[in-house]
Image (cartoon, rainbow, N blue to C red):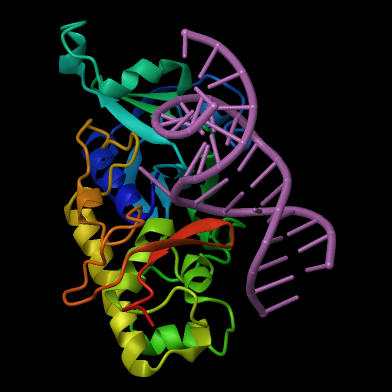
Length: 287
DNA sequence: AGGATACCCTGACCGC
DNA sequence: TGCGGTCAGGGTATCC
């Protein structure tokens, strides 16, 4: 489900409920998600105040007032939903669509003031852990994480440097979180189409001109997706239950057989498999 | 180095 | 209605 724009959308939804609020109780309803919860998980969170809710790559980072960080990854199917205290006074009046899957509600955070934040994850590829903020960058999860694509650092020159003389495909290089962090299968396909670059082209063959176009395409597709509240495939919803709508703006992703949307292009979107994942592109205009 | 594959897990969808 | 196969937004390990 979540690539960078979806995680950022979730962060923006959760921040008003979590920031500055004390955690009254944490209920982890199973011993693990993808990995076991850390030692004394609930006890270490209880009575802590979330000082800020941030994001690094596809990770949510809740900084706590004791110097620890609650690190959360949504995997493929993780989501949060918020229950505000007002909703509780009218039981039955409002049923969040996702509440049907209550069997996959794995963690519940109760906050001072009455708000509840529930983590739901059918496939359990997500995970949560705790790490001291001071050593977060050295944590195995973050040690090799690459640059933020929306930071000021990303431009054509940096792409050329990251890609070097790599013979691996542009698709694989852009999915490599050690180089650029936060892109996933959808937005890589979309950025390559916008930059008119073939996903099969060797990453090390970019000219500075094409690299600049690609950097710009990455930036704009992510910014547009965030502005649209992310993409809703299957069941992605914001923490407040709203749906993202960027999926309507996909130019190639999941559009096999449709005409290429590039003005004047007579090509057809095709699907191939690269490193085990579907790639959608137009061989006519992406070179 | 990097590609292909398997795996973690559940659910949706499709053809029969 | 049921059943089996396939696929899914992520990430890691292992083998060639």
